[in-house]
Length: 305
Image (cartoon, rainbow, N blue to C red; front, side):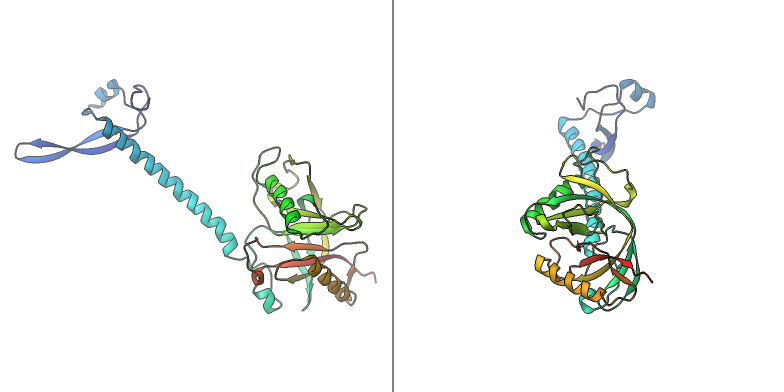
């Protein structure tokens, strides 16, 4: 028991107890043990004398010690919560704004895919994206942005990221989430920062992907869920258009068509044959529509001279 172990060194809390002397009232310290009682031999060697303590005094000492420990843990938790909240409240300044719409977009300060801008104009920009690893899953249903299907796929990927893997390893969240439409012949997936959703066109299927934290490289734990797979996305060049609001299948189709038309007039780059559109979503669900950053991307290649 906590108060009767005679052989374990104790953590002691001094408590002042009044006692009367002639014509005066003074205080002397009494040492209350918190974790255990010191041995009688130790007390004799140190020359320290203690008065007997009541059960109530012992309980009060224990409560004070536990309260101090709880306060310390609460402060650490609040600091961690504040740091995580700040990543979403204080936006990243990674992206330059070409318009008022982009100026209002807010991107969480989370790790994202590494890229550099090769060129830009008022409508779109060309990026060279470094290779990275993703966890992906096939979305149920016929549409890439159906709420039920997207939620199910997002949850499967989040469970892997937060510990449902062979090492029970919890990994950091990244941005964005990718949604990608692919060809039914198994086109190799290339993506950028977010979670990606892709569609197998002939089968009306999409893929959603989370970007893995770069510090793990290829040394990632395997998913316990067989519907989740790990892939490496190779280095590539993409054309990107940013837009705000909520993503719908109709909006994706419209913006993809517009981007393809714009790229037809690009003197240096052209859309790579057979590629499908990719959608990146950078914000959590609670972000306001005008603060959300979404991107439509198509893989491109340099024109041969």
